[in-house]
Structure formats: structure tokens, C-alpha cells
Image 1 (cartoon, rainbow, N blue to C red):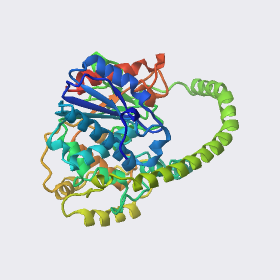
Image 2: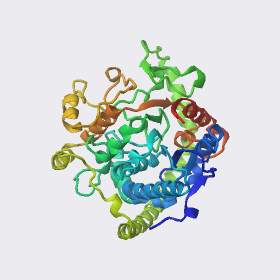
Image 3: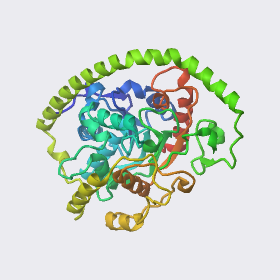
Length: 451
């Protein structure tokens, strides 16, 4: 079960630094996806100030294996390095963790394990940051057969990770999805998260097809569906890429008058004609791609299940199989979770305007948090009254309330020069279209990362 040093990737250090920063990649990812983050971090903080570990144990298809399996692997990598630093006489005194995409959820699991094993009594948690991480899962909050088909198909083609991201899993004996447990105020995961001095997230406002805005920003609304209908405010030093976190968006007071009908019809007709070759290609390719994807997913799911079985049989897991919920709320949470799962349904794009998803949230959270310390929070305004509430599940609304109660500084990102914003936000590869991601990384280093 022990992981040799050659099996992990890290930026070399001279061993004198007392601050360790861990970077965790996402689904289908590998350490090279975080090269720009790691190199930028090293460029700002020299080796005698910061150790950097880029986790490698979940590379490639290993991310199919689920959040808890991935979290245990990353925890083991971190613990082994911490022990090495202790043996070398240069123990870490501070810890920061950065997760990209699925890596943000794996990181949230890992910090719960580190907390439960007493590491946060020895090491001060400093920065916790996620980039484009689906904190609420990836279930599509839209009605219609295509959305239902995606929610059903997608959840069954990514093995354990797919079921967890679409919140159709039942995590261990909780009778709840793992994402719900990760956001439970009585869990070791929220306890651990609350201890970090700085908590921040970066979320694309458009064109993130892997992890949409509402889930990466932990939001019950999406003000950016129609950019022509809103006024976006940005930070001067990072404009036009980073929005003002205190007042990012508001509805325009008046919409511009519509063009004459003939002009609009002519424009839409030209647009349709230019897209005919694309539509023709898609009609031909989608069936082939779907069959290939399904076959590959079946193979990867089979391999993933085998890996999970071997992981479960491995030695050294006893330290990670600890109570996930603290206090006397475990049974109550399991029962209430069962009822929420039965009652949650996907029947509309938005909730009726009269329905308030925050009703009774304060009293509910007061009862749930128990002796969790009160936190000084600085939240980003979601301006809920200005935009309709998405038709999320009850569990997702609860996740939003619980995570907002812990408090994240939310930085919204407007990448305009590339359609693949999910990759561009961390400059996943060096290409000109990803240059706006460099602005995001610069903001993170200057404004959100504390040494």
C-alpha cells in the first residue's frame, strides 16, 4: 500500500520550507494539467518558502474510481510526504490544498481524513482553493428529454465517479450521496474545511461544459444565461476576466429595442446556413462517437470496479475508515436523506417565484451544526431576488446552504477567447487561446494565496 517516491510528482524543494501546497488534478487528468499552476506558484514563492506536491496517484482512468478512493490515495501521498519532512527534521507547519475540477471534491475528502487523523493539530491549514470544481455535482437542472437522458446516461458511464457526480450513489451506511455527506455540517469534511484560514473558488460564468456555473460557484441561480440582459462588473487590475466578487452582476435596467422582424429573420437565416455543415457532421459522427464512448466506458468501469476492490483489500486503510459524521446526528441524517432522495424530482427549469429555497435554513443549520464554531464569513452576494432559482434537488439546495455557511470567497471568471473554458481557467496546456487563464492564475497568486 505504501507509495514509492517515484510514483508521485512534485516540484523539487530544498527542504527548508515550512509550508506545503498540494495540487490535485481532475477527471481523466494527470499532473501535467497543473503544470502552469505549479510553475507559477514556484515562480512567486521560492523553494525555501514553499514545498509543492502535485498529486499523481489518480492519474488517467483512476479518476473513475470515486471521490473517496481518490481522496484516500491523495491523503496517503500527503501523509507520506509529511512524514518524510518530519524524518528530515524539516516538518511542515502550514498546509494549502488546491483542487481542479473533480480534484476539488477529492481534496475536500482528503482534508477530512487529515483532520480526523489529527494532522490539523500539528499543521495550520492556510489556503483551500478550487478551480471549476462541481461542488453540487453535474446533474442538469433542466427539463426535457435531452436533460433526463444526459442525467441517466452520464451517471452510468463513469463508474463510481459518475454515480457520485450525478448524486445517485449511496455512500457507505449514510443512505445519502457522498456529495451530501461532504457538505454535512456535522461531518469531518466541513469541520476540516472550516479550519482553513482562506477558502476561495474560481468558477467560469460561460462555456464550461464539464462543470457549469451553478455547481462550480455553489449557486442556486445562473445570472449569466443571457449576457445581453446583465451588466457585468470586473476588477480593474484583472479586467475583463475576473468579476468583482462583491458586486459581480446585475440586470440591465432596460433591454435594447429589438431589430425589425425582417432583419432578425435574415440574420437568423444566415446563421443557420453557416451551421449546416457542422450539423451534418454531427449527425454523422454522434452515433459512432456514442457507441465508442459507451464501449470504452464499459471497459473503464469494469477496470475501475476491479481497482476499487483491490484498493478496499489493501493494507493501511483502517486509518481512513473512521466515522464521517460527528455527534448524534448520523441516524437522523440518514433517515432524512432517504426522504429527500424519494421526494427530489426534476420537472422544471426554475422554481416558482414564490418558493424560497432558503426558508427555515437558519434554524435548520443551527440544529445541524451542533458545536461547530461560529465563523467570521465574507460571502459573495448572489442577488437571488434578481434572478430565478434553478430547479435543483433538495440535496443540492442543502449543499449550497451548508457550504455558504462555511464561507467561500467566490471569484467569477469570464473567459471569452476560447470555448473550452474548463481547460483554459488553469491553462491546462500552453496555447494562445488559454491566455485568459493566466490572468486567473495571476489573480489567485496575488489575491487568494497566502504564504
